[in-house]
Structure formats: structure tokens, C-alpha cells
Image (cartoon, rainbow, N blue to C red; front, side, top):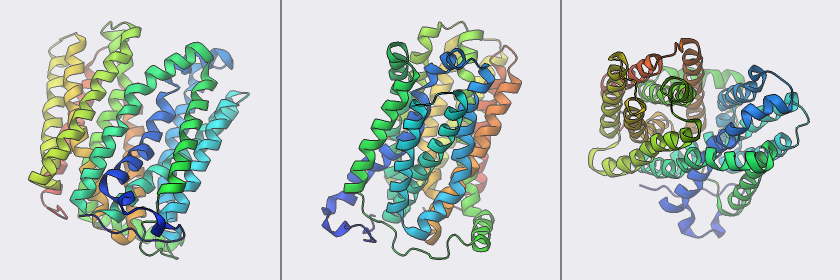
Length: 413
């Protein structure tokens, strides 16, 4: 079921009614969510060259990623309540504007310090857009319909990690790292123009007290006491942790351990990401038949099977890239089923605090991602086992959360 948008500041009444119908909003939300992978995947191929260009060790260059993750995680606790206070539209447009300006600053960086700071600012803008996109879906749709919108939007989102490394590599070879950030800024500017023209306000009633520190803390505490929010967040965090484990560790395992040529890594990565794309289509087919909570449990079961298979192959000493790629494909397929349901389920019970709920959900899963990424770096032992065991652990936690948490506290069908 689609809710009617609420004009608040923007001339939403002048927009055609189709602007907030499922297809139109899906495209916008998908483009909003795509900003996060584009901000990183476009310049991944530039990381080795940045160390030489700025005459700094690789560990310093790695801070351009670490500060982005830190900024993205921390800002989620603020940007959601800001949109509860002032409305979705103005805060989202401000986030897009910051994203564009920060991307231009990245492109113009004269040194690594400026680039790190600009990446942090870019993360703040990006995070604001992503969090509010989730809140907009909660405003405009009932939970099951919202999960379908997020699944369709995730199909668009998959284009970023599939095409980003390839396009970024071409830009790096031909023009250098600045071209990647100029491309990111151009895409952000186009999206800003489209959003300014086409996106109406969706928040029914702004909350003037949403940013009061005491009330904000009490609101987050109430969310953490909610068994519905906790159940869906545990499942979402486990799945995102498994995804981040693959992102963090796959290049080391595939290239250094399993002997995949560097030139083939992009194709291997794209193959696995295709699983996520397939999963979003499966999610959309399952939701009308099984409902949100049952669809999530199907995906979590598949994630556990894929993760355990990956760990079993590694423990058995199978040293072939297919032993990692095929189970990882299955895990990301499960992620495409589970994650839209987890996002929608975590915010569905809180229509008056959808921004805060979306922000806390995002901050928690990002915190798990940082911890998993650190674990993958520390545990690497020259074998596929640590990465494979992490995928298995993520799948098992997601399955336990789905059956013991979501099944007891579904919040909705």
C-alpha cells in the first residue's frame, strides 16, 4: 500500500501523482542508495597510485577509506533525526549538495590530508542521503510495499559495485584519480537537480523536538528496547557484516592465495555482485506470496547454507577460486533477499521516528562492518579459511536472528 505524500515546504502538489508511485520513487531511492558504492568503488583502482603520488605509505592512503566509513557511520545518528525535525526534502537536498562539493574537493586535493578530510565530508553528505532515502520509503509505503521498493532500488544499487571498479580503472589509467572524483561529483549534481525538481516532502508532521539531546537519547534507548527493531537489525547487521567481509578480504584471498590474475579480479567481483542483483529480484517475487518476515527467513536460511558450504570447502583444503566465488554468490543472493526486508522491518514500527530508526539501524550495521573489516585484516593467514568462516558465522547469526528474533517479533506479516 502506498501512502500519499505530504507537502511541506516544496510545491509537491504541482508534481504529477505518479512521482510518488512505486516505480518513480523506486528509481529515486535506488539512485540515492547508489551514491555510497560509487563514492568508494570509482577510486579503488587509484589507491595504489595515491601512495606514490602523495609520497605516503599505503596505511595513510587507507585512511581515505577508514575516515569515510567513520563519517558515514557516525552521521547516521544525526541525519535521521534532522529529517524528523526539518523534513526529508530539505535535509536530503543539503546532503546531496555537500556530497557534490566534497567530491570536488577530493578531486582538487593538493595533498593526502585534504583528501582524507574531503572524504570525511563526502561521507557525511552521502550518509544523509542514504538514511533519508530509507525514511522516505517508510513515510510513503506500508512495510511489505516498502520492502518491495527497497528490493527494486537495490537492483539499481547493484549497478554501482558492478560497474564502479571497471569505470574507475579506466579513468585512473587515462586521467588519474581526480577524474574519478569529478565523475562522482557530476553524477551527484545531476541527482541533486532531479531531486530538487521531482522529490516532494513525504513527512506528515515534522517534530520540532526531534533534535533535543535528552529526547534523542531517550528515543534511541526506546528503539534499542524494541524487540522488533533489535530482531531485524541483528539480521541486517549479520548480512552486512558478511558482505563487508567479502569486500575487505576477497582481493587478498583470490589474488594472493588462490592465484587469480589481478586483471581478472574485477570480473570475479562482478560475478559475485550479480548474486546480489538476482537476490533482489527473488525478494520481489517472494514478498507478495510469503510476506516480509517469511521472505527474510528464506534468505537467512540460504545465507547460512552458502556460508557453511564456503567454510566446509576451505576446511577441506579445496584451493580453487570457485570454492569461494560460488558460495559467495549464494551469500550475496541471500543478502539481496534479506537486506531490503531488514531495512523495512526495522523502521516499520516507528512511523513517528522513521528517521531516527533508519539512522540507528545504519549506524549499528556500519559499526559491525568496521569490526568485521578489522577482523578480516587481522585474521588473514594466507588461507581462505578466515574469510570463509566469517561468511559462515554471518549466515548462522542471520539465521538465528530470523528464526528466534523475527519469528517471535515479526512486527507485521
